[in-house]
Length: 309
Picture 1 (cartoon, rainbow, N blue to C red):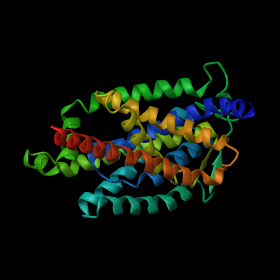
Picture 2 (cartoon, one colour):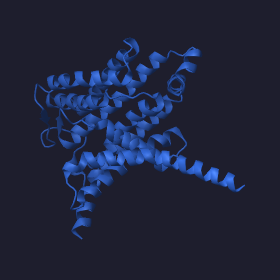
Picture 3 (cartoon, one colour):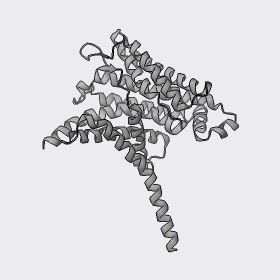
Picture 4 (cartoon, one colour):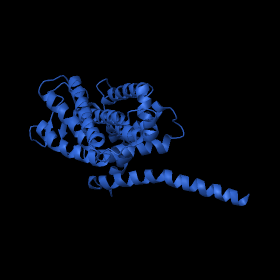
């Protein structure tokens, strides 16, 4: 009974974190699925968003302006990765690693050489806080996060329906064909990386307000969580969600499911927080393998049917 009581109590917090990381997962989806680029900048840009947001709020800046500044900082980080990749000819995965390394030192400078900086909801007028996650009121962060995500999905749905968005999608689908059609693929890759890391930094800013602090290591392993959300969303909703906006919604739901599963596992007596990274890797590996085995099973079934015929 104690297990279910503890689990039920932890679910609102898991939902809030899932929604925050769902925004980050949308950023990963843009590079991983739309652009077909492996970008590891996100581990650094996530922390950059949190650091910028927290330090500006501590300086007396309005929280809305603080998250806007975090968004711009993430866009700048994506721009650096894009220029390293398209302008200097560095492979995308290495360009992301280089930017991530740069951001570690930059984030420390932003936070005044401290590994973490705190902001309390009692002292600062924050947009959301985990203190109210169990309340049935408008202060509950889940309500704001849902509204935030719906607006973000609506904007992205509109953007990728424009000529520019279509050219970005064409770049990810077939870069050589897009170039043959006169599309500036290098520009689109840079724009996609900027948009992706802007969303990731925005997610980091929201998480820093939610948890009440920014930490230099808060983005470590973010790419794994983002990929987990993308893969879970695709595996569970691929046949159901065909519309682009619904695909983005599936990614967000994937992030929430991921955090629900994590909470269930952490409540089990033979698991501890030390096993979190191990379990995360196992979850990602399982969901990555599911599409492969589904195709393999379908092919085997088709061959068996042909043999009987």
